[in-house]
Length: 318
Image: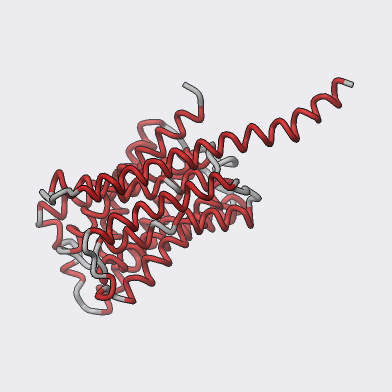
């Protein structure tokens, strides 16, 4: 199978996991604080990463230079992205968060053009905005009371979206220098250390360390943490790193809108929420945007090849 097809499959799987993660995050927040939720999900993720490392008999060695190169990636994702997202979900609903996170492709497109010189053509831009409008259309038609949502939650989810956009850009360079397993392992390790340190310090200050593991007495929390740790933290890090090692950042980011659609489908399937005609219309708009962004991106790549690469090859022949 060609690498680009594998990258698209990875991006679609990434969208599916992220789509379900909003539901499991909301469930886990019913039993634990945001910091405890983050600490437990990355403890679970790091334990699985260690098992995989031992099974593969792979050593992860990093020099000081390697650490400095990877740290910006780790700082953006998982630390900033998940911190802003989880605290944002405390103050806002998953539906409102979905609307705000539909801005990730726009921020990615802007940052990729500035830092990676990945300029999108007119067709790509129109398709990108089309996909974003599909997400907004669904939630507006779903009688969402935008005036009632928390400003604090909006700002936090917006900051999470910006962190995700910059991660998409930074990962494009870093994923070409290191193995995917090494990057995923290091990102998970730093998430484990950072969030557990923050949670334990918070419990020590509040003299509530005995309640740190209390959420695990809930089966709903345990299931949520397994999903969030193994799939939403560990697997998505690997999938996104792999996809971004092959696909342009602007193409990868549009799959975040597909994740929003999957969140709605998950709600209908598992929470027995009703589906209406506008869900179907919005779904079509989103899918057209996703397909259009990648289709016009392919045309642009071929155009660049004909206008730049072909003349250079002809010169070499002469």
